[in-house]
Length: 79
Image (cartoon, rainbow, N blue to C red; front, top):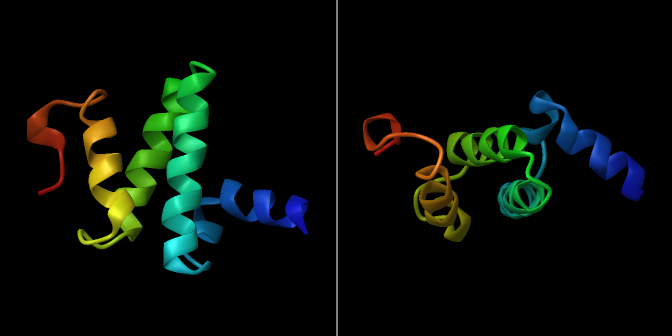
């Protein structure tokens, strides 16, 4: 159900158990939505979670990396 899906993604450990393409897209969407509501702390957290689980060739990885660069210095970005 929709409610179960949202609960799963709110738990950091739950993020790692779902299918990777769905996770990265879901995390990216949640981050962008958080930005639109000026919840930059949540947005940063979601972008960081995406970078932890997604491989560099995932289409959302580079998008998240670019977005996250607004929140951190270049030295802190994963390479």
